[in-house]
Length: 172
Image (cartoon, rainbow, N blue to C red; front, top):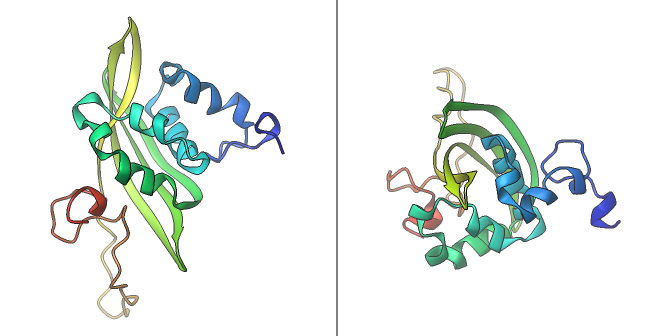
């Protein structure tokens, strides 16, 4: 199937050519943080490392982390679930999502509340990913057994050191 007729990996139920592909070519076409987040997810699925690096906020210095970003992009991405999205101010927005991926025989879920900032680039407003937080999992009821925890920490999981950063950007 050509990309022209391919469903968009972001889960929008639209064709890639009508959804994320134009944003991959011109990031300023993302008019809402959710559009940028969906296009970044699609870029992971499609292996577009340059796009993912380019849509980090300049303060993140993503180029210095290109290898770790490429590792993340080259994971096997399985699906995206957008939980909520909002534009909080004219220049800041948030998207909470779950992205599912497989690493070897294990499947993982990256659950993040991402923060996006809008900056002017060549006279046009453009959204950038700046950082994210990992929402607290719901409390386990006292009488219910908790699921067995895996000893393996995924690259996109919160770092066990408690820094709040992704493992790949901290203690990996």
